[in-house]
Length: 422
Image (cartoon, rainbow, N blue to C red; front, side, top):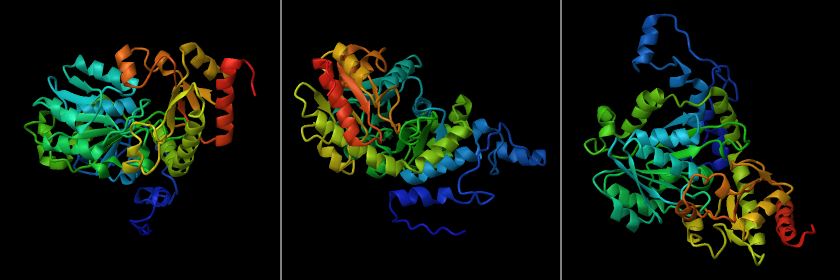
């Protein structure tokens, strides 16, 4: 079957009819689940070539699997990358990506308002001699002043969770590239539906696929997409020196054949399949989620004693980036301050439709008190930098009817004061 998909087709059409969604052995419309540990060969000579990377093929699922490959190819095509590698979780994806370019003594520059688990990871990297320099605001000027000879990567979240800060990728990437440093972007909360960081100037994109990409809350995973355009200086990035012959693909090759393989952080084949089929509806879900989040944020913003943090509100400090980088969309996460921890807990407990859960990106609306959960190991300063306070409620908006969500949250907020449900 020939490739009939036009290069200029729109998002949902590309998702369903991408080149990565074709060519399965028995003409299946979805990739088969290769739920196996190992793959057999007719003779030892064939297997030797596969292990030596001289022949295409699969040997052992930890180092490659056709179901995983189908998912990787689809994400890679949607992000416009040169290659993708799926991992067992979003955190394993971030860990593998950073360890691929950093040695002991190297430095990473990042923002202080990151997801709590990522902050914890940077503290763990300190024990390996990899130091992280945090800046409160990831502006080009702030980053430029922090770059040293030891800086090996700049890492940022496109839309930070839950702080709702937006990374100015074009400006930050310009500063990074002038210094010979790659820009790695966690785009989990944006997804390729809202923005494609590689087109904006990023060099590597990372997702926790457990969130919006999967969408159903049924499998953990992560993925790394290499843009394949960064000109690596192998004297500066000594971690990649052994892979110099691969030039701009040195990062991907080291990940695939060395670090990722040895760490054993592969995605399970069944999780890859669930994530593949979840990805098919990403555009439909994100369109609805963003519309619901915008409506809920505007409704809550009218309540006098509630302080709402959402990008599409005109008063938001990063509002200009909604059009500049995010295609007019604010994403699916909003948070608001309730006035006290006690009232925040009461509001959460009074909600009928929002589930109390620690994930984001589900079909269902999820709610959590981040200070007592996701940031329980963070300092007060780290929490404030992430927009987390004792009275903060984080909401991951789902695809329910927006009128029902607005009524549910409004009733819970009013009941938390008056004691009577409308």
